[in-house]
Image (cartoon, rainbow, N blue to C red; front, side, top):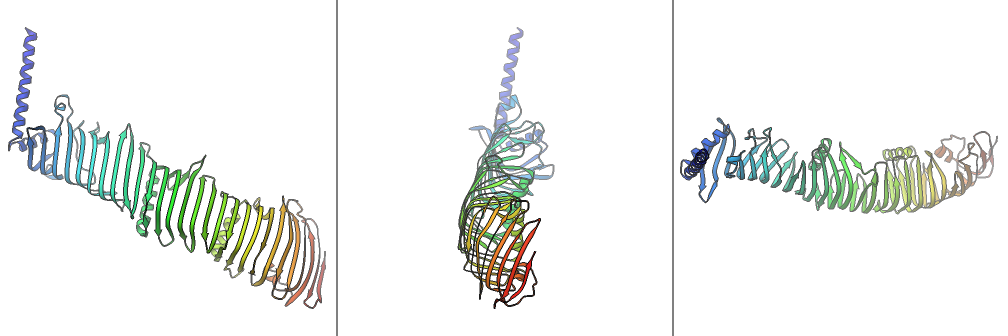
Length: 549
């Protein structure tokens, strides 16, 4: 009897529930539906709903639509929308918490973060917003579309997405940087966000990417492509660089592959024309680039033109491997300063080792400040080596009032060269031959100067040097034992019609000489002892003085 009574009681409750549900659904179909829905929302949440019209159909009994709606917190408006459609999961009425199969909102504006408290445990299968205008301190969206799956409210009342997230916006502004045609396609797995596709237009460039965002604030970009852009605005370019640096100060950016295709830039201090670049495996953190420590970061690019200051490089092809302590140059070639440059090797902060260096037809000019910077860089090097050196018809000009240098049509060949050893500028190893058409070294004019020298493990030998002046010529030869502690050396020179001001111009010696003179000189010395004999005569071969020590 007790069991039969209990079953009847359950049956009555089910019938009453069905009658109540049917009554509610029937009321929703009438003009009283909207007031009842407003009352239900007020009972469920602390907010009040205002709407122009509610739509309901018995064909979709768990779906309601609202038009021209506004949600208020007492008398203060929170958010409004042109349209809303919601479909309830009826099983959640029994099992709880409240769950919507889908929620669609259209024509709404959100300013910063909504001051809304959501019902704890609320779930939405698919949450979509269309015609969205969003504004915050860092991001603005216009006419955007957003869709998220498995949207829910956690135990702390914060909304979260456990499924997928898509965003589409014809215009967006991030940290004052305007982009267009923004598309985001992503999904969540455990605590990581996988960005399957991110694309937008920036400064006429098409940018696309795939990445993973992890809870430790690391953004791992598996692919980043920049295609066919042109940077012309100094303000926008600087804003972009600042945004990247600011982001990298708070997060770690790991890039597995970067491709830049046909990018150009025309700015005040630098410019690019049609550069194509590929880079693999590097990171950007705290405003600095971190290169791969073991295998290195591979970087290769080519460009129709590269400009920095007054220097222009055209038809450049570069292949590098960059690691934290050195740069390996597999190949570099370019047209530069009216000529051509090609080199390979490796460089670090204190060493330069080139397998080969070819400079042809290049005319280099240096102001005093530029020459000083070059000298500072050279002084910081501990070792400089060049396997094969070739200079063809090269020009050099140093505009320094204290010591101007002008050389035209330099030709040189060298092999196995060590030009700096243990921090000392000296030819420690190799063979070198050099000549030029014209030269003017601190106001001393030279015609067709020629040098031939060699060195073997610090034993340097000047096989021959020839200097032709306006009315004379000089030759010299010598050697220095650089590896010996005493550094023994000897030097011989002979000349006719040598300008006497050469000593003051080149060596800073203020000798009582004028005009021209003939020269016969033989020197030998060491750090401990020295001997020298000098014979100097005028152009008429009249001796002026002799020295012996």
